[in-house]
Length: 156
Image 1 (cartoon, rainbow, N blue to C red):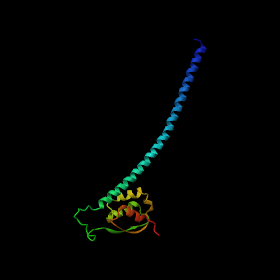
Image 2: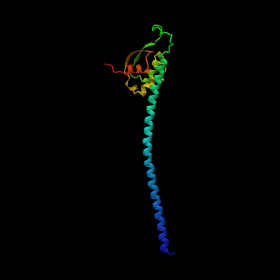
Image 3: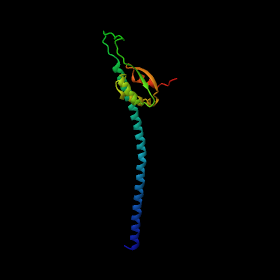
Image 4: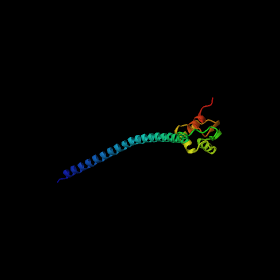
């Protein structure tokens, strides 16, 4: 083999190596572009998770309300209202109180049975930031939804 043949063969190998390098660089860019579709899938999954959390909060409220409804036998008569013990309380919401403070207060007053359910409901329904300062008459026969509606209504 002469010198020019070896030189041509070496140049050919160099060009082939450069071509493989360019191909691998473009392939890596395609992988990076596929991560943007993964980001979109992640966002969709997070939205679905949020929806499931809201549904769970609503189901917990439904369960709590179902537990409050008395089951009567066919022959059993409803109790007289005077014998029912409903805890009536005045809730005073002061400036600086948050939904955690209010839930703890309601639980300690006996108006609600679980402060975490109350907190979860307010967050799921985006009501935690709409709580109004004031005095509210509440009782234990009220549902979490009714309590939340009462303390988040705009006063006129």
